Length: 297
Ligand code: AMP
Ligand code: MN
Ligand code: MN
Ligand code: MN
Image (cartoon, rainbow, N blue to C red):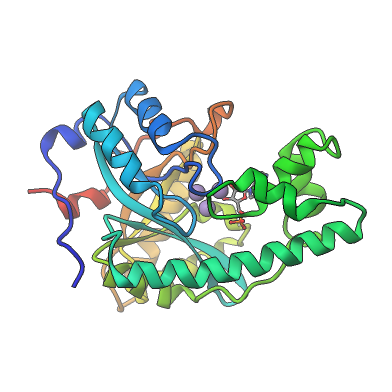
């Protein structure tokens, strides 16, 4: 059985809350300690570290959070598949020691390593020699991902910035967009639950879906037992936030399966020079049921 979930005191939820960010354990630029210290400076009182497909940064972050006096939830952003669409499911307040989370991580580690070799082979064919070694160096001890290839392409002088690297070589439909049979969304929600956590559909507007498809995604996520949706992710205009809330209302009215989805939020912070996703810069509207209510009292 997973350990019981951490409970949250009043002080945890009375300041800035940020439930989605990355460290050097995956594709973030800051170490877990530096991340926590930056969160503290930004007035964050409740933080969840949600690295891609790993909890390796949690122990360091927890020690730093204890010293800084902020509440830290163990989290993870699991890569998953909804049909052919890749989706990200954040697990919050998971037991990082649980077999369920360990299994989910190990499976994705194998898939990521194999994908990295394929991405490197394709880049090599395009004349970018040394791609594997370069990306590995950027990943360090962390879980390897496309941003590490992007950073290497920039460092090697092939491209001016990471955004261009994605646009030309790594983004959807480009040579480095290797299709992977990630565990499906339902299995992923189940793994998070088996680890004692809450399953949150990450950044619903970032998948490039039509409103109809997005509504199906939200409905199926709810039926799969999903707990919450990121109603706010990064800097987001209020119209978008209302759109997501309207879709959630339609889903809870039309679907019988599952409980109504709660609201989560996070910056999706990766690095300091991106003010549009700075730690602690996100706010939920007042009239929603926040995911952290699950762990109060
Ligand atoms: P991966 O998990 O290895 O497939 O990489 C996905 C990560 O790449 C995301 O979490 C972002 O950090 C980053 N990313 C995705 N699309 C872009 C983009 N267009 N520009 C810059 N970074 C991106
Ligand atoms: Mn990322
Ligand atoms: Mn994501
Ligand atoms: Mn993320």
